[in-house]
Amino acid sequence: MNSEKHENLKEIAKNIRIHIVKMIAASGSGHPGGSLSIADIMAFLFFNEMNINPERPDDPDRDRFVLSKGHAAPVLYAVLALKGFFPESDLRTLRNINSHLQGHPHRLDTPGVEASTGSLGQGFSMASGMAIGTRLSGSSSNVFTIIGDGESQEGQIWETAMTAGFRGLSNLCAFLDYNNQQIDGYVSDIKDISPVREKWEAFRWNVIEIDGHNFENIENAISEFKKEEKKPTMIISKTTKGKGVSFMENNLTFHGTAPNDEELRKAIEELENA
Amino acid sequence: MLKGSLRGQYGKTLVELGEVNKNIVVLDADLAKSTKTLEFGQKFGYRYFDMGLSEQDMISTAAGIALTGKTVFASSFSVFLTGRVFDQVRQSVCYNNSNVKLVATHSGLGVGEDGATHQALEDIALMRSLPNMRVIVPADSIETKKVIEYVSGEYGPFYVRLIRGDLPVVCSEENNFEPGRSEVLIDGDDLVIFAIGSMVSKAMEAAELLKNISVNAAVVNLSSIKPMDEKTVIKLAEKTKHVITMEDHSIYGGMGSAVAEVLSQRSPTKMKIIGVENSFGRSGKPEELYELYKLTPERIVKEAEIILGK
Image (cartoon, rainbow over all chains, first blue to last red; front, side):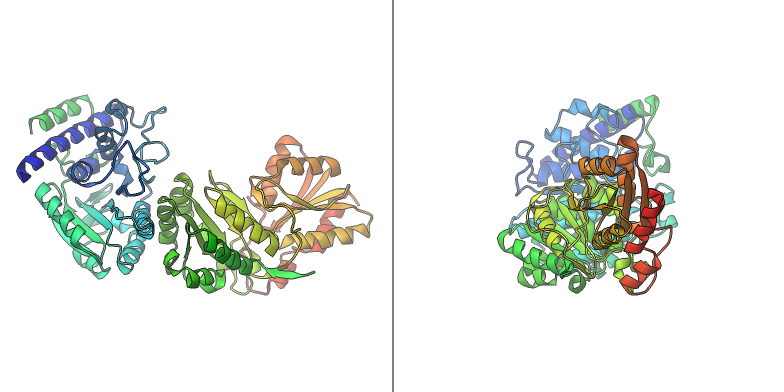
């Protein structure tokens, strides 16, 4: 049963990845690496977990998702389009002058985007605020967010880590996209964020470590999050930057560079035959 | 003149609003006793969050709470509510157009003895440069109450700049606050003085002094800096042909600059901008600082003589 569900999610993640490389190639700029690395988590959240419905985008009891690492906008746009918030054909307009798909997510432009993000650290605090707000309203909805490992160097991340831990925001579930790369190089070389588990535990979070490309891992982690009643949950997700396209995997160039025509052809071929 | 506390009135009004509007949430950053949000916290604890010394977190969290349908007030000193968190205000509050009201209770030289580190002299410049942000500087406790009531019922970002000390009551009880509407406190034909906050009563004193040299000066409380009452600004500039502005803020980018932007493009008028000139503040009592930085009624008289050619 589970394996059938996971096969289905694999297929969705494949479509998400194809959309990512296509839209970034079409726009000529964007961030493929960090978008591909969280495609599996995004597929699981949007197609198996979250209570969201494009017909009722303002439902006060909907689950919220905030992409704190806003530069991974392409992966968010891909899932929102596949979910039916807007036509898939809009994806190829990414970053165009007339497009509703900004370089970084903007909630006033794009249906389904809950918060405008891109200045790192702020989405995480906004997600924490949403967890406070929905809890105040007596809603049972959950708030999901993804932060980057480079983003974890922002001081604001730790201000919010302290707030959410102290206030026991058990309706807040964060994923750390731990691919160990940032624009200028390896996170462990630029400013190492380890030890990660110990840091989040010290800030009073429920910490789970997973392989961020393994659906069974993702599923188990989320069910642990739901059982936790006192602490916010941090799911440290070991990921591969550029996952799914061999020449983008762990390749620093593809943090923020669009594939050319030949690279796009190869990428799609690989993804389709995976 | 009767005096009143603006921040005291803010705290009181918050509690009154909190009784009737269950949607109001208040955040502070370890200055609750100074900003006067404490009473709201004591009465409505579940809707009150002291975020501790984490201003960046406070601003983005305020935006997040607001995005779930709440009306969120966040308070601190102006220096920590604008400059320290400029990017959070820019992105989490303004770019998201979230329903957040920033109320700064300590601003300008009026902060006094704490000195330059705590005296924001550029907050109006910063806040009025942001899309979606509206900037209001109440002149007394009466206007503070009106403004806080108004912003609590109007969607979107506001920056309300209050001051630590008590100020003379200059505004009338009549009329509700409306953004983009100013109050002409004294009418006059020879000169118009636009003032905000603690400078309004000084401008009124200056108008009295100017009578001694046969100058009839109008005095306008220009509390709504953005949007601005352009109609009244232009009307009085055209009537009097001479404009003086005075504010407890840098001469760069503040209310005077905002008036100059309007007049230079629509009705060029001889004017003088009085404020703090390319300098930080320092420790001292507010009135001593106003003397030292030449923000006094006598200064207005001197500048009036110069632009009127007397």
